[in-house]
Image (cartoon, rainbow, N blue to C red; front, side, top):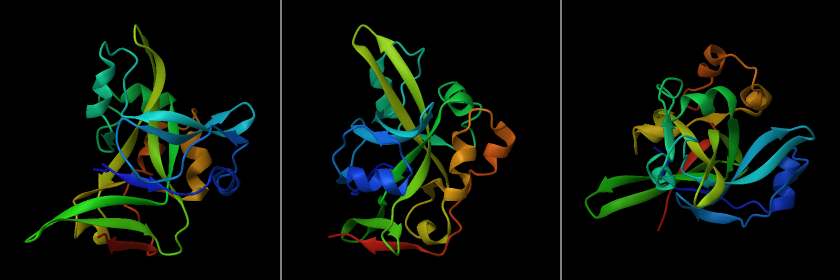
Length: 201
């Protein structure tokens, strides 16, 4: 799973790197927790834009907005079939920019956190899905990060990892017309050799 990640790039730089027309104001954070606002990249009539979403997907049909705390991740193997995720996967996909994600390994001294990041410290985009919810408590958008089985590096720490998309596939992932079968081929462990793991204090 992915239960914590960081995105420390300032807004203007993030807009440039990801080719955004504009984005909502956000605070760069090294440790982002579930149920808090996160930046998601979505297409618009103007081009790509950055919007704030609550991390933890609340399906539009849910009667309880607190449901999102249990749906921070969507397993790639079942995202197209699960009732909570399938409509968002079909129609509302997003990119979730990050500079790192964290996993913990059980050791004799306790749980040791590791930061997974690109060696050049540049940001990357995780595959996400999003939903709009409206009820007596108000209206908001929320997202979930899609996970897959771990690659060789991450597997030493944890059995799952977020789906990291190559920049060449951003447009295809975000296109609502992209067929589900082809999208499923993007849900796989990160194959790049530029991912590194750093133990945290």
